[in-house]
Image (spheres, one colour):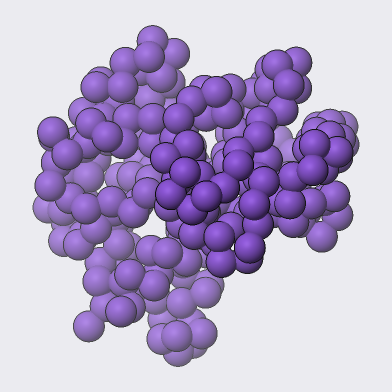
Length: 229
């Protein structure tokens, strides 16, 4: 018996890629056209951004917990949230829901540790890059985290919110992001975390100057593994 996966969605693009990854990669373990049962609760991104922009992590946790509890009512055994920034509210979730979550940063940093990376660049929203979502897990796996400079953080944030979450993939933005990765390589990073679940849609890992840690697909694989154990 497989476990029922719940997805607390925020950005449609990131949640869709995560869902699709679970469905496509499950066939290697469960047979063709087969995957665990998945239920998604999609709270509007605008609602989550209202809390994020006001540093209201309790409010965000309540909104995520509301979605998680609906998933539990639908039969989900555990949940994932394919949105790195939302994990700024993660430590408050247990106040409002008993649904177990897989933490996206744990899935990513475990992969980094297993690949023997030491110094890791982090790309994502400005909230994510300047926040503490990944720091606990960097410490746990003895990793050093590095972020782009302030100007680049602002540009990346704009690309994410003006383009990627709206399904816009622009070549000029791809070139900007590739340049940022080059700068992280110059800072002696071993790899770079695509810490926004939309970034894998625009950054081609084969063309990047550093190995990429795709947070979207790594979270999906962690959920799949937990569902089929």
